[in-house]
Image (tube, rainbow, N blue to C red; front, side, top):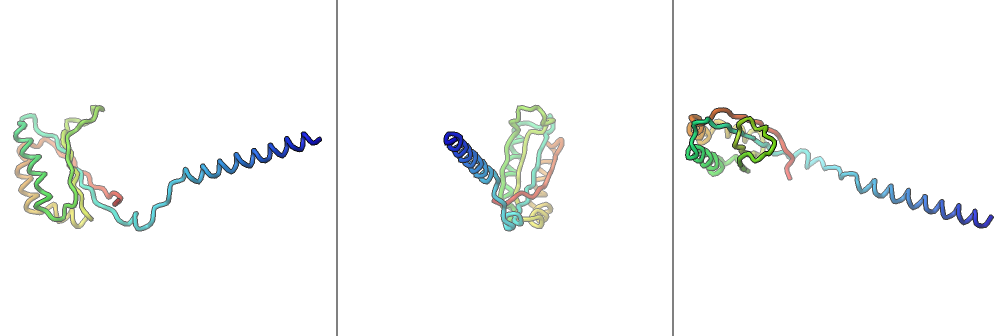
Amino acid sequence: MRKRFYFLLVALLWCGAITSAMSQNKTKAQPKPTTMKQNDEKLLRHVVIFKFKDSATPAQVKEVEQAFSALPSKIPTIIGYEWGTNVSPENLAQGYTHCFLVTFKNAADRDAYLPHPAHKEFGKILGPHLDKVLVIDFFGAKN
């Protein structure tokens, strides 16, 4: 009888320890909720992807790269700028080779950028060498 009692006691303690450990792991696995302030502060990302004409020379493409890279110093509403060429191994680029990411604080800043004389001048440099362009804007969380 005493052996049964001790066995039952050990089994209950063991089950309690397992249950406690599982509930602690569940709590740790859940992501922390974001604050309202984080959700309200969004940056506008302006993604521009180019496919150049087959006739565009490497020097002409380089001129376009340099002209686009000069825009942040000419247009004050640009708060971030990155660019690069496609390195995806998936072969889904459909001839698009260059991606530019321009960041703005808000839509009004992007709207000021679009008709800006420096942006228009860039378009004149780009136009003769461009086959296709894809533009997507989205709001991303501000870190």
